[in-house]
Image 1 (cartoon, helix red, strand yellow):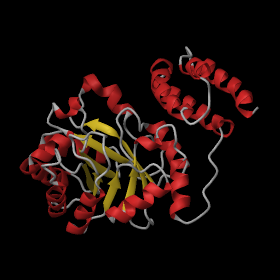
Image 2: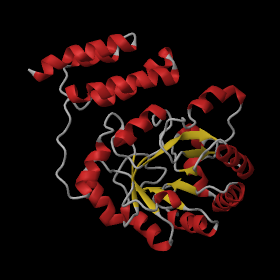
Image 3: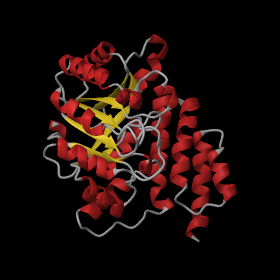
Amino acid sequence: MPALYGRTLPLILAPMAGVTDAPMRRLCRDFGADFCYGEMTAADADDARRAKFERRLHQRDEPRPWIVQLAGAEPEVLAQAAQRHQQLGADVIDINMGCPAKKVRKKACGSALMGDPGLVRAIFEATREACTVPLSVKIRTGLHRQARNAVEIAELAERCGLDAIAVHGRTRADMYKGEAEYATIRAVKQAITLPVIANGDIVDGPSAERALERSGADALMIGRAAVGRPWIFAELRAYLDGRPQPAAPTLAALAPWIERHAREVDAHYGPRLGLKVFRKHLAGWLAHFELDKAQRTAILRAEDRDSGLALLRGSLPALAA
């Protein structure tokens, strides 16, 4: 995958629907993420979902590469969507074969596709033929622990001309429970020559080092651990480079970043939806600090962005005391 070459051990923000929007991606890049996947986007987005579709597109002020992840179950629909996104400026197209969410599985998309290798091959072939930019796929280790077929899917990806593969080290049935299966990711790495990205249970320096040692992967992908903690990329880079770990940031130090994030979310979604979206990010930010329950609740339940930020600022003197 050309976007990976020239970087030593890339650290990548995982695609997360409703989370890794443009403001989140910009924030993570500023804290050291090498690449950021866009939110999972339905390949068959129609006019009724146009506003959501357009919000999930890359923004012109975002650093390149722009990576678009598509979800779908029909080869021609995915191929057409890949072609359309390439025309809109996407630098990389990624196919979602890892999402375990029920509403995605019900449409036979995401991780459900791993149960039909014949369909997977048809999707790979059609999408590869339709676009000329790098093409990748994100998968799980299988449908369940008795049906792990990540190696088979990875070999199909290589034969069909894909450029990279990301593996979340859990089965669809595991959802987000249990420990990541780095041994399965290592088996994938040993079976193909494509760059392999390891995803799952990477939350700090030691866990990142452990993921690399056990998987042999070429890059690391961080998902839920980055929510409310975008500085994790700076921490991981320092640890893996053997540099002193940066001190954990204080809430006072992070307040300007939180305020910037709030403003960008507001501009991206509009005040009403923006407040709703930002609350889940803010809950993540605040989880790292010793606010009492009353303070936390007041900030998260503020009726608008400015009053919530004012309450946050008001909490800083008490935290510093």
